[in-house]
Length: 260
Length: 260
Image (cartoon, rainbow over all chains, first blue to last red; front, side):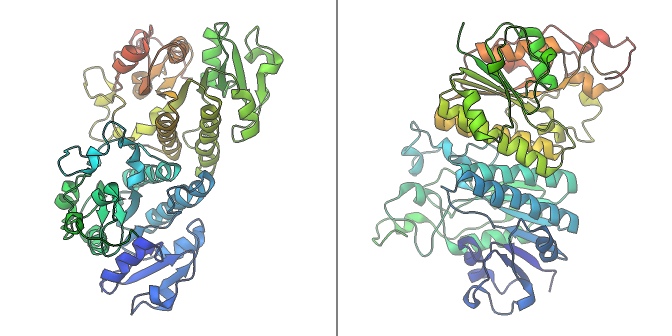
């Protein structure tokens, strides 16, 4: 098997979506601030490959990253309403620590979980709600400047600047994935914005598998399923990463069910 | 006289360039981490308008910003080689504190001292040294994504994301000024890069005066003199701010003198 892949934030929602679908395809190292319960660890992952550590703990991160070929960096405070001090420490300082350790260890590829909140303020009053509907052809494509809609989004946009710096200085291949609305089973109900940026669990896992497999230099892409409604282009993810999503929120539009 | 203008980092090089040329044109509040010696304070500034405080000290910043119409925010660690912990605290966290206080106080205009280091890695091996010469027509114009060349540059690019957020959320008018190479009297000698991004003291002061006077929403401009050599466009600063620089590094090219 190839060298291992480090997944930070392995116990979170994105981490679990990934592990549920491609958990046996790679030699994983799993890092999370909280000890991972057995149901969150795929079969075949040895105890020594599971780290309970904060990503601002440089020594622990260095150990976890040693000898890996790729890092999928998800760890951080995931709350859109997170206060400044938390995102400053967990998302900005934490991402710096992981990048610094990865660059020094000679890791080849780095996939960073950025967020739709890094560009949330493109959703201006004059663009919404049309933006969320399939007839509208406004698209963000990853080349635009960030316009965060909260301090969590500021921290994610800052992570993208840090990855740019580490790519330019150390040659580490980087893909920033601005993740949409990840929900299990079906898209959010009665929430057009969430339907337009829906990312199914299996499309999410496939996208990060492509981040491990594909060849790229520095990319910023959107992580959403193949939705009819959308204002994020997935052309670049398809072209460079070979992303080929199979779900589409339109297939669920007439169904009922509770919002997650 | 109009409401006061707060200048943070008043004792630093940019602050002193500003005060030397337009020190009697405004009702200043001056803030610096170090107590300012008398020679650094323009005539007519009262003792009560001079604050010795760190910009991460929220209470002191709130007091300094109360009732001002504009903020020129220069404070921070100015060293391109500054370590991460210093720029994280002084430049990123500090800028957040000043913006948060300014937004809450209802300040109308905010000029942020960004830096050429926020885009330093556009100076790739295949572009240099041609980039620094007057025949070359490559231009950065402020619409490009940051490509920092050091962690100081990362912190300045992050400041630009923070100003974007506070503009979008609070309506505060913002101009990010990516300052070039500020030296007194004459441009750097035997340093083509510095000549291409030279900003004279009087052009610097004039540019920040325009940031106080002009009407704008959200702008990112370059702060350099009217140099023949250049790879930063000043068109936007001219058009939106009415910037009209009078110096040009080409006028000094055959002179000797020591580099500053």
